[in-house]
Length: 464
Image: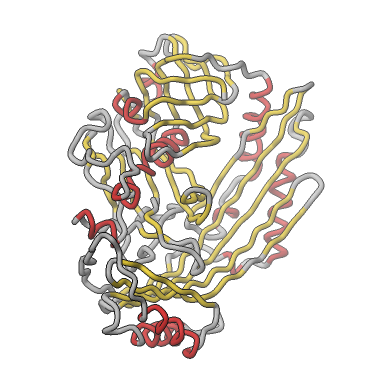
């Protein structure tokens, strides 16, 4: 970054001072992002190195948020934008006074073992070629191998009218592999997805041959997989499927901006049972290495661990400052922004089911005929209706407590709350996945999800 951090703090405070006394609250956010993306398959290799830097100013007055953004790092432009925000006379229909928060002072660079910035582009490309080549030739039915490497560095500096002065630097790294198998007219694919808020150790500590073998074997197994049964069955889901249920199916209904708009099926259920007593669901932005982890959210609230559901009881919603003020609840540090060019929304961080005390064998044992769903492929949110719709990459029949024949994609549907209340077994091994999540169809932010194996008494499944 060409502009030094102390100079950025000075610019943000200067911009805020132009609004001081003219608005009820103001904040200023500096956002600098750089990333590297390397994609490779059997015929193509692509490298993308995007960068983005700018400032977003925001004001709150008469119940209305207003914001303005610029890539120009100079006082005249910031003064122009700040004066524009301060002049607003717009009033909201609902009068809301923001809850005052104690100011925070933080300056944290999240630690990694090895910064991707210390690795040359040539070395990254060579490593990706090796990762790709590790899957080639393992089986003649693999017709293509798609691999992808991504790293990003995000620096955010935040100041506000309450006296907060904060800086964070987050590095994230991902490694993906998609071996595509074909036999006759069947084409199948599984994938590996590794990484998190980590450095280049994601690459250096990965056994390319082991990951390639397991992922290729899984894709090949799908060639002989059977079509899943349709109907209501006892099911067992792995950590990936547990994560997508926690995030997509349940989590979006927790976002308090949806709640105050009466667009959440969970509105009015605080303190009530929404899952079985075995179920605890957490959203935490403090998990070391979690893909959705951060030091503070994009409203300058230090990261938190939030127990959302405790022993089946809904404890709280996820909030930003505005929704917490409307609901008169605590702020959960869940205001997030894709970049200085977009809007801040209530968003999840790392959302997961807490671990229990059962082994996989104990979860499977009482199931006479059921279905196991593994490796999430797709999930659809329905925060208004509370419907559940998610799909696994593959699965297995469960017969007399044992894993049986492999199955192709399996769709899990029905009511979210009915499924959560049907959980009657929780595994002891906790694992996390990673990805990006959009609010609707845009404004993507990195997130994590996960959990242990879960056993659900009855759920509706069908072919995916």
